[in-house]
Amino acid sequence: MIIVNAVVVTNKDNIETMKNAIAKMEIASQAESGCTDYTFSIELNNPNILRITECWENMAALTAHFQTPHMAEFQASMAAHPAEDMQVNFYEAVAVTPPGR
Image (cartoon, rainbow, N blue to C red):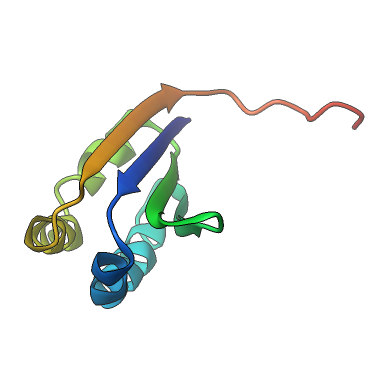
């Protein structure tokens, strides 16, 4: 499984302006083959931080995601409302049973 964890430092105005693009990206990505989670969230204690959490069955599914029209549209929206900073980390992971179960 491939996990993507992105932290986007922006501002509330950019997030508000991009709400439709964010919602469209989230829905379209969740419908992709190999996607098991794709979620945007805003930090409760810092509304200028947008987080993107993704879970993909494999690298091939993630690679295909980067080629989709909705990814191109979302990247264009991000370029029109640039972030102050963005950190994106990619992890290969194995699901484990939580402690106590």
